[in-house]
Amino acid sequence: MDQLLSKVAVIASKYLDNLKHDPVYPSSEALARLSQLDGTLPEIGTDPERVIDFLAAVGSPATVKSAGGRYFGYVIGGSLPAALAANWLAGAWDQNAFAVSASPLGARIEEVALRWLIEVLHLPGDSGGAFVTGATMASFSALAAARHALLSRLGWDVESDGLIGAPAINVIVGEEVHVSVLKALSLLGLGRERVVRVPADSQGRIRVDLLPPLTSSTLVCVQAGNVNSGAFDPIGDICARAQGVGAWVHVDGAFGLWATVAPSLAGLTAGIADADSWATDGHKWLNIPYDSGFAFVRNPVHLQRAMATNAAYYIHGDTREPGQFTPESSRRARGIEVWAALLSLGRKGLVDLIERTCRHARRFAAGLENAGFSILNDVVLNQVLVSFGPDERTRRVIEGVQADGTCWCGGTVWHGRAAMRISVCSWATTDNDVERSLASIISLARES
Ligand SMILES: *Cc1c(COP(=O)(O)O)cnc(C)c1O
Image 1 (cartoon, rainbow, N blue to C red):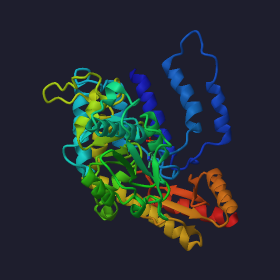
Image 2 (cartoon, protein in one colour):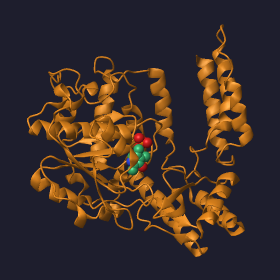
Image 3 (cartoon, rainbow, N blue to C red):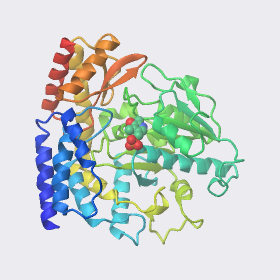
Image 4 (tube, protein in one colour):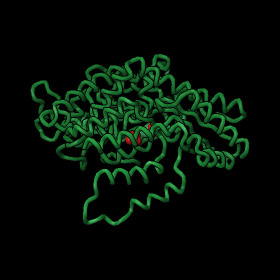
């Protein structure tokens, strides 16, 4: 075991060191060699060291180098050093975070991490939470709590009796709702298409003037951080309306919720803490390894009632049984990396991570605008949308950027126009990475 783990540490740190100069996207040759992994499963086992050598030789060149500082595709972070190292240690520990008795450490560190998260995100102090795989499952969990709360108020026990014959819940979403929220609604039997979609403004924000009347059986799903523009719905205004009538407001803040840590972004985040539930990711802007997301619910009883496996909703004394708050039973102890990441950053480091990546985004926007290209969004966060002129040219530039390998950016469509999307989420991105990437994008765009 000792030799194997030492070997993998050497391989991994060389890999991470090479990110400085390796192309960000794997070559087609490296991808073609993945067929070597595709043999028939042998009858006889293979020595673990040979397994790892083989895996590293074929796998490493075929990876997308999103762990480095010049990957700006989707909304994807890297892994902070302390978080990656804690993840390895947690792998060795192999704790099952389902129950206190299965892992006192897993349960305890998750409780601490939850408290720290609630503090740094400025959520209500007695909120509860669940450590899940990502923002999709975080929204699923929080919306299950919402479904429980709204229906139990109407005298319906959805956990026991299901949705067939239940009173209606009216779900309101913004026109720019993330597909994962619609997926969560569909998994919960609330339907993707049964929702009322409120039109959005030029930045993708819900238009409050077009919000239908809210009632005590309304569930409103708002967004902190549009996946294209980075814009926030007017969450404070919507919460103010909801509070009067007892509607439930759920915030999809997969990356955007992290703006709440930065005083400089207070203008965007005002009123967010007035919502009833929040979903966010650990594996995006907090830069911890996959898979990691968090559901927070103002009144944890609703989450617990939605997720508990037995009708007694048992809590042993004051002990929080983690498995009574999550859709899963057995699972890895995700709190370990969160604890390590937050301790390594400190409050200041976390604020700096968020503000620094936003600054990089503004630098991208300014550099591209100065070079004569159009920035399509107000760059309020870490997301930049750029057009290089006619749609075909923009698409050619995106292809060129992706083939060149200096950096990697994805394409999107914004208000009917093709755009390249730059999302800066990684702790590893330096000023130099931004300048190198800008120079490469601009020169490729001029040639296109
Ligand atoms: C990424 C994202 C999600 C989904 O998160 P996963 O971690 O992939 O499940 C949901 N909403 C928004 C706004 C996102 O950016």
